[in-house]
Image (tube, rainbow, N blue to C red):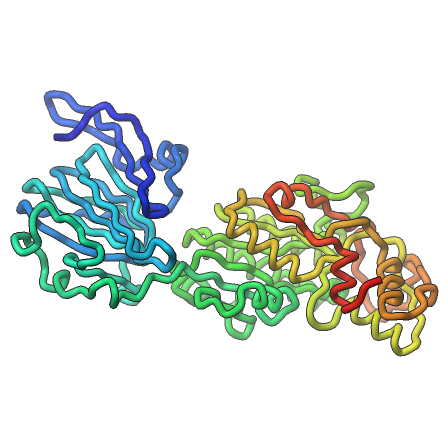
Length: 471
C-alpha cells in the first residue's frame, strides 16, 4: 500500500550514483497525488540535473511480469504510477563495483535515480502495474546497450516470484551471464585542438585511455556546418576545447580579424550550443588578453574584462558564450609554453647562436607550462569543482619577458647581461605590419583554483625543468 505524507528524501545505495528517493504522496478518499518529477525541488535536494528528454511508461497486466536486466547509455528516473514492483539493479560499468547488486520494492511513494551503465530490471508484485521512467537521451538503434541475464548466478537476485514461474521475454531470458558481459566504459572525453601545444600536453596527461578521443581541425572543424550531427554527442561527458586562433598580430589585419572571429567566437558558439543541448561539460581555455593590463594588482576571475585588441576581443566574446553552458569551466591562462616553437626555445636558440636580443621589459606576468594546464584541467574535472572561471598560470614571483630571457640565458650557461631590456614601443617600432596591443600586467591571481585543491607549479622551477637544468 502506498505510504502517504513522506518528505522528499534521498537514500544512497551500495552502487555509486544509484539513489533511492522517497516522494511525498498526498492522498484522501478520492485517491492520491504526487509530483513525480519536480526539477527545482529535486535538484535542490541533491538529484543530478540530468536533463530528461523522454518519458516512457511500461504497463504490465499480470503479477510476475519480469523485465531486464538492461543498461542503456543514459540516466533514468524510475518510479511507479500504479501498483508495486520488486526492482533489481546491477552495476555493469567499468570499475571496482562492477557486478554489485541492489534490490528494493517501489510503490508510488518511491523513485530511484539510475545512472548510465547500471543495469535496470523489475518484477511486478501487483496486477495492472504502470512503471514509468524519464531518460536524458532519445532511444536510438545506433546506441550501445549492455545486458545481463536475469538468472545470473553471480548477481544471485532473489526474485520474489521464481523466474520459471514468471512472465518474461525470450530475449531477456537469453541475455549473457556476468562473466560474458563487457563492462560499460565511462562517457567519452573529446579533446579539440589535439595537434597544438596544449592539445599535445592533454594527450600526454590522459594517454591512450580508451574513453578519451582527440581531434584536430581537419577531423572536426567547429566552423563547418552540421556540428550538431558530427558526433553522437550524448555519448560524451566532456569536451576540452584547446583549439583557438592565437596569432595576435595577424588578428589585427582584415583577413586575420575574420579568421579570429570565426575560430574564437563563431566556432565556440556552435560548440557551446552542442554542449548545452547534450548535457556536456565544456572546458574552454581563455587568455590574459581579455584584460587591458592597467590594474596594479593580479587579476581575479571577477575583474571586469576590457580587451585591447582583436584577439582579446574574440577570446572575451567566446568566454561569454561558454558561460551560457550549464556545465562549464573557463580556464584563463597566460604566457603559455609547451612543445613546439615558443619564447623560451627562441631565447635558448639565440643564446647558443651568439645573438644578443632586445626583449620587452615593461610587460609583467608568469610563464605557464602546458603540462600544468593539462594537469589543472584534469583536476577540476575529476574533483567535480564548482563550474565557472578559473585562473590557472604558473606561480611564484612575476617577471618581465626580459627577466625570463636573462634566466634562459643563465640556465643554458650563457651571460644574462647579453639581454637588453626595451619598451614595448621600442621593440615593435620597426614591425612591418599591424601590432596588437599587449596588456602590460598579465599576472593572474590563482587563489580560486588553489582553493579548489590544485597547486600550480612554480614558474621558475618549471622553466628549469623545461630546459633540463638547475640554476
